[in-house]
Image 1 (cartoon, rainbow, N blue to C red):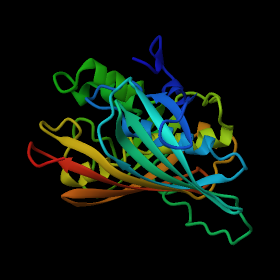
Image 2: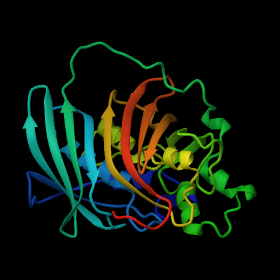
Image 3: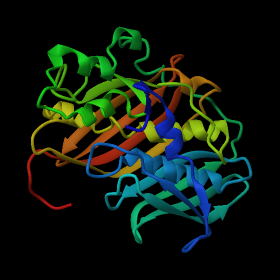
Length: 314
């Protein structure tokens, strides 16, 4: 599977995901194409679309402004390993802020839409939220990786997931992920509560991405990794593991605020991703990324569909 070389996981799937090719626009002002990465599901990973749209928007802003928020809707499932066209509309370029609309098309139909806003930055007060849970949860070295958890005989993966899924969860997602209190792959490890935290770190240092700066790549990395686990607090509080028979999940909409750019090198180390959920037919999850020194980097909110059994409409 893509992302492993001789069994060694790498962060290459992420950088391949956000490597966009300029294209001739058909609908708006600028256009790029990108390819979704392999995964063992029936549809492409949603974080591919979030990160690709953010990258397309960032490449359209050339006056030094920094991405500070995105607001997006997942409209249709995207095909795996297939090209997506991202059309960028330049809505506004002001002295302090710029706004872009990005629409993703596949097979001629819109599959994703994103509004992105950029700020020039200005002097102002700094407020920190106390570092979240960085100092109160077990550190990543005290927790098993996904690969270690799934390789443990006590996990009993036989007949519950196929080898392709095990490889993907273990090392195919570009980032090492370590759950507090435990993962929800096969069973809900830990309490069935509406909260969890996940330590995340790329398997190896992030590679350069053509057409973007290192700072832009790092923001795209946050957008990419945020979607892997953001619905999990909903699954946890409902007592549903990913392998629950008949379970259907889907991301519906997504918003992200980038409060501070990661300092150089921070994205190559561990970040704590704290998550809370509120369930009610549709579920809403909130996530916050903190650096190890407590710096609050970004906040994510996503609404998702959690359907334990067949039925309903999407």
